[in-house]
Image (cartoon, rainbow, N blue to C red; front, side, top):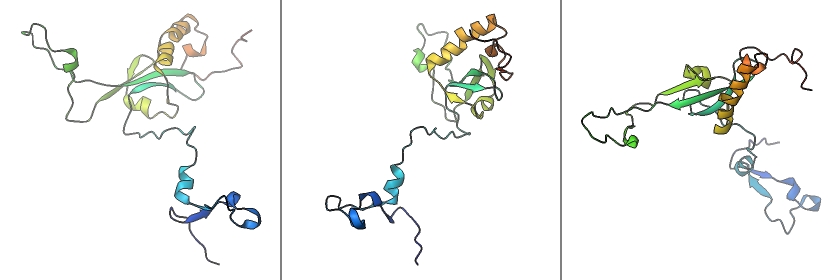
Length: 171
């Protein structure tokens, strides 16, 4: 018995295309497909993108400060090197000209729940999840104001895990 390893050029039989008796049908002349095409045809829906830990991406995120705690808003942004306008110029440079391309790696900063933090504190967290700008605005605006008015709410204490048994019923 000869053992064969599957490689991208090894044809793989597709058994459901064969006709009765294991013979290829007349209508379906193509019986074999390469393993490479079969691997590419797998659905990628629901798979998160791979996050490279040494390359932070600017954007709006939510994360948990500890396991079981409520979500808090986080943002990663790139600092822009500014050109200092000359005091003698009447109109000054256009605001689009104030940012110059750098000859070195870009600098990023992060804010967690509105407070500046180290970029690694946000980017390397396992619970980090990208959100839309509108959800970020909601979590950093109305939800924070509501949490300040309701100190017993879980969102008011993001450093503590949520105890569902201690929460009052909704109705």
